[in-house]
Length: 344
Image (spheres, rainbow, N blue to C red):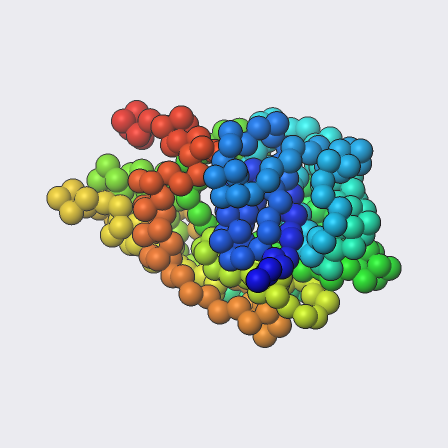
């Protein structure tokens, strides 16, 4: 008996989020088409029975490469990120996020897809950070005009407005997710801050724990920081694909965890029993930025319930650090970092 599987197109499939969603949704029963900017995926997607297309989304002609029939949903996770940019250049944000989103929407309209799923930046609500009051999903969007994220936020806000336009005029359902950081293992432990390459903060702490080095907790140890594990995020995407309503803006989070909980968990999971890291409290040092996201709308309209705690995430992280499941696509950790040289 023939069973029709809904076909979905995932733009940005070679990124950390896109690659995981591609594999997860394929295993969940969808027919997945992976689209990335990279010329080659090193044969990664073929191992999961997923076709891969290299497309520059800033060029509308490139979309002619893609399937045009029986497209149920489009996941648009492509676009330049500040965390991936050395130095600064505004043009990739404009071309990949604004022009790219317009082109993706035109593709979505022309193939008659039912819905689009898009990740919005957390920094559009930067003006509400610093409070323990959960921030609402429909809070006014603003731009921080004096940061390395400014052009990025401008571009993401414009992309959201374009999506709203296509929803209003063409009836395309839209599920726009404001992401706190989605926690997952990546073989590359580096990011860019103000255009400079630095170790991701929790990766720095994990490496110190692995080596049994002392770890400091700065400022107020009980300030709450929003978190969401990749496995909970995948659950939300699945909910959005199955939802029958028109969608809207949704916050992505899990209720958060304190800095104390985070560091205690890192030491418990990663530090060797015979050489446990010592935790030192430094309340006189700067506080981390506190924020929480109100996820009640996400729960009510999409049926989402957080399942993974901070420790659950750390255990999964450790498993993937050992198994390197996306190594064929993203490389191995040893390609980026040598822990024996980590002496700070």
